[in-house]
Length: 252
Image (cartoon, rainbow, N blue to C red; front, top):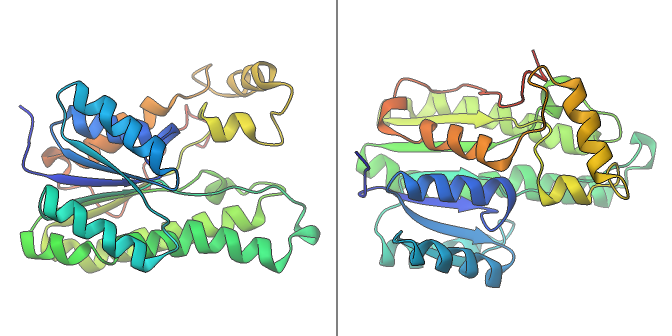
């Protein structure tokens, strides 16, 4: 049975992993707000979901901008009600040797990936506390678990997301709020395909990835979306503060 009483916001929700999370949540009966820097794409995907009978809106939101977030939340609350599910998928990646990471690049990656997660979560937690129920899922990265060359700033930002997730789980559990993180690995997304490591050799690169994974294939966004929808469900109420790896066995 689906639950139509819960309102979900997904940041970075117009493509890739974020979109898969939004679609899986809608399929579970949630009312979904898709937040993305690309406002047109967010509304396009929301319109597609509405055409399938789901309740969804798309909004242009920059997770670095607190005023932008506040205005967007006013619209979500006015349209659907209090927000009790938040999935933070908005993020950026960057590749550079450690000695070549500029202070500006470091600050940009931290501002979007870590501070953007903080910015997105802090204003909705009061809704969850007032409701006595909440689900938070942060999308992190397996690079923060294993380390990754040329991604020190990215890995550090996602490691911060791990710490934020666990601390929030401890602080908010008494209010009926669970907080978990999914660190994907080797997911076939537009971001992965456009990365410097894959340019000019996408299919070959994905085949290389698949060969190194115990399951023998690269992941797809729906692999993450399905796990996210479960963690946001009523049945996952005893799972909190966890790092739920969805990685094809790539990190054991």
